[in-house]
Amino acid sequence: EAQVTQNPRYLITVTGKKLTVTCSQNMNHEYMSWYRQDPGLGLRQIYYSMNVEVTDKGDVPEGYKVSRKEKRNFPLILESPSPNQTSLYFCASSSSTRNSPLHFGNGTRLTVT
Amino acid sequence: EDQVTQSPEALRLQEGESSSLNCSYTVSGLRGLFWYRQDPGKGPEFLFTLYSAGEEKEKERLKATLTKKESFLHITAPKPEDSATYLCAVQANAGNNRKLIWGLGTSLAVNP
Image (cartoon, rainbow over all chains, first blue to last red):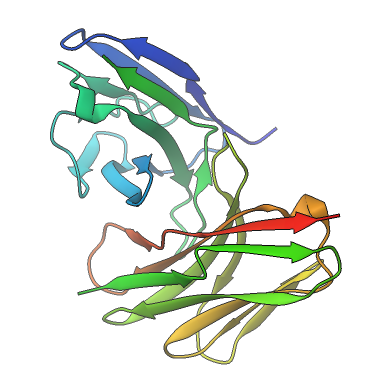
């Protein structure tokens, strides 16, 4: 089954404790992206990757890192999480075809205390 | 500034009561307009892409239309399983990011 898989689904952590949210897709998609979703603010792009070894900042990249060493994986790293990073995070992927729709994972709900 | 506005924020319908959701946009050159459905606790699920004014797409009880300034998602004879948040997003011609500009969504509840 074609899918984007994120782990973990739920994560509670403390301020400053480094964490990684994994994302993997099995559709051979070139494009991958991370979003956060907050009430009243909607979906905001954190980072994106057009292909392996090519990543760039989205609208809200502060406090986040990403890497794209393999086509299928695009982990999101929070080096020193803070409470304002408490949010619902989504990984998404799409093919390189013009206007291809995004396929989303089921989300990671992160709470930073 | 590129912007997407969805209305209403929330809509409650009786089963079988048809209605429309609106997505108004301002963007410097439209590459595509996307509709997604999002169920609680899940990621958005792709519904439609529209590219140019006058275009229409249909899927079961849903029909999406596009003008130069807005898109409508028409829901005909909705069922309780159509309850979800419907998100609209636009992709502008500028840049290589393939970035989408998202609306805040319309939360639809269909009562049996």
